Image (cartoon, rainbow, N blue to C red; front, side, top):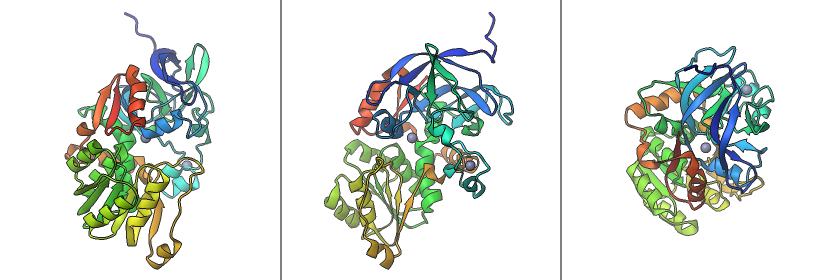
Length: 372
Ligand SMILES: [Zn+2]
Ligand SMILES: [Zn+2]
């Protein structure tokens, strides 16, 4: 049998988004070989994340057609020119924020805020072109486009990992775990003994809870309206749960925490839960906004309390992630059993992807993971 050359265009199956609100089409596409600084990855698994849903539902506009998915892990199939440190057969986790390494933010050690990513926002690779086509027409990239059996990604998005670990669980490292752990360990720097509230216990919120345990928080109040999400929260280390919203939730958080909390994490991006997270953080406390609000959304603050009590409101984008520094730490914690992912994941096939989005819309707890 003659194997096709690595440099040839290949075909694969991918879930293609054609328009906001329309179901994804699972179909055959072609994938061009990787160019300079790029890597072709055979996807093993991809989580289905709220950010994908935001784009699919048109809340975050993005060029179409596009292959969504940004929480993947897989095996390097081929590397393009000028790629070092990676070769075919390497197992990799995929980070969805590429970075240039040379801008002001990168130079400050904040590559998650890289200023040179206009190409990524435009749905292309670094050189402004695309590697995906369907019936000869170009299809856009969505960071790592992990809803495709084969994807071309920037080399900086590939984090090599030992090949004895299960790729279907490692996929979650690329978004939910990095975002949640980074928010606690990098952005907020939670200290031992602190009291924490976690509002929204989806894939990210559950990882905020696991990270708060690692950081030594002694009170971890999980807030959600889903009973199953709260069951998972307790399994992963929450010390109390609140199944409520609004003023009722605020009173319950204070009751469980013995007052205001040191750090309130918001993982939904909704006005009322943002205002709840602002309300329950106390003197010298922090409110960390992780959830992505819709563009133009506004929430009200109490500026006098912020001044008098030196409260801090922070955004956390991709867990203030520095991929080279942070992913190996996550893998060590995972090996040590301090990051548990099995309980929160449900494997599905790529053809079930639209059902997975329906479940996400319904607020169902846990993470659907496409296994290729
Ligand atoms: Zn995500
Ligand atoms: Zn940069």
